[in-house]
Length: 237
Image 1 (tube, one colour):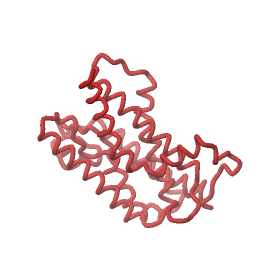
Image 2 (tube, helix red, strand yellow; image 1 turned 120 degrees about the horizontal axis):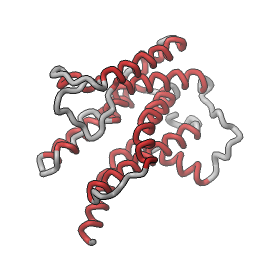
Image 3 (cartoon, one colour; image 1 turned 30 degrees about the vertical axis):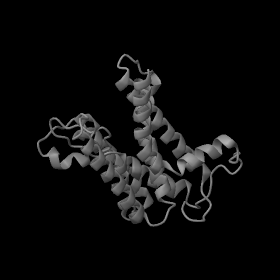
Image 4 (tube, helix red, strand yellow; image 1 turned 45 degrees about the vertical axis):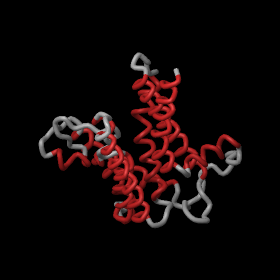
């Protein structure tokens, strides 16, 4: 899905839908920060809980279609580390520790992408049980609080007092990514769309595809823009 090759529109559109859902979730969270009395709708919790795993699965599917996963993984991981550095600096300028991103979605996706060459070498039949094992390990690790978690929190094992504004540990999310690898190798083995008769040129679909092709930039920029807009609205109200 890089370069001049034909892109698979439904994957771009779904990625775009997921990232827009994330923007809505963060906008509502920011609104609650500025207006604590705001009640979040039930749909918020559904999007917040399901949106992340769905996006990770889609990223796994796309990883089977792209080139140079190591370079892409390094870029995404570097973006995640940049988020950590920026949010850590924010805590030094009066923001609470709750803004610090220790291991967010970009850290997770970057690490997963670095493992793509290994995952692609596995036989296809081995991917589903591996995915189930990794997700189950994540469920098991979710309740663990250990002093050693100071070094293991990227895996999902936390330590007392741990917090991260955006937290996507490798367990269970590497499992969702592995499931995406399986889906990509199964449904997209020919690297072509599964919906050839769908009106991909319709304006709403094209708009979602555009958003889906620029998820990294949207992730990096949306929160400063949202927070700035809410702060400006509070200032002039």
